[in-house]
Image 1 (cartoon, rainbow, N blue to C red):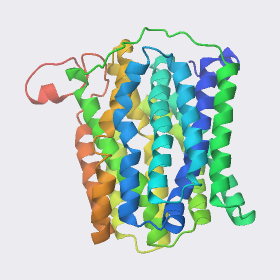
Image 2: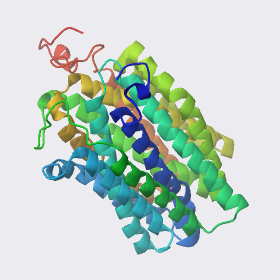
Image 3: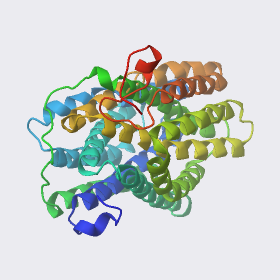
Length: 403
């Protein structure tokens, strides 16, 4: 894909497919995310431990994302991605009708199956369909498009809750239905695109990808602190309503829409190594800020900055694109989600109990995770490629390709 834009190949191109499906995902997931803490706390009567259990169970499909490669023996990636998008929509639609612990466990699991499989498949297709030179910018635009969709979603959610005063179950239903409609449209509107490189149909684990695996693992662990507990901090400690949470998410999306394309271009200029160092250095301070936030505005500021740093995670994806065998991308995308969810299954539940002792400890643990990621970032070469995956071999005295 060149820098001339997404529409250079027409409205029925691979580029437009990537953007449109990227837009469809957050319409459902943003609805689920914006309402979940309030719905679980107010309607289901759950505390930090109950929410932790549900959030842990939500990550089980992420842990099983490696199974996507087996299903690709029967399904094309493009079609499978749309089926996953449909499951995400269905899971979101039915969430509001089951305000109990076990009801939320089941609906969250269904939503999560669709979300995680779609994310693995969409990442695989984006890495296969974009050129290495322009991939950071393209992915920045995709993140921006997602954020725009989330911005619209959060804005509509706020209107439906605070102006129209709709019940939460109706908001869930509308959000899920829109995602499903976009998935159906994409199924019939776009041709089946052929792969440029035939993808491996087996689980791929390579020693030379070890640093990428480590970065993904730590990113998944640290992300759970943000996804599960940062929002709950705002609800429990500062008393935010569902409408106020939507406004905070709205501010997140505005910042990301503007900054994500710029972050993509910045990765192209300064490289993945420098971008990851900037991200993880900043996150150490963000989590310390969460830990000691005494006013609502402090929590909001940390939340917005934290979300912006997520856009910098594009650098992990483009780092892998540069070092990987092109035939490994589909399999490795599924494997990466499994790796990132190994601890994701454990952290929400165990840290839910830690939360009952002190929320400060939860966020200090997040700062420690960011510090470990920062150490790993320094091992990324300035010019990564196959044969030059890390600088660790120089450290222990084994030669490796020059940076």
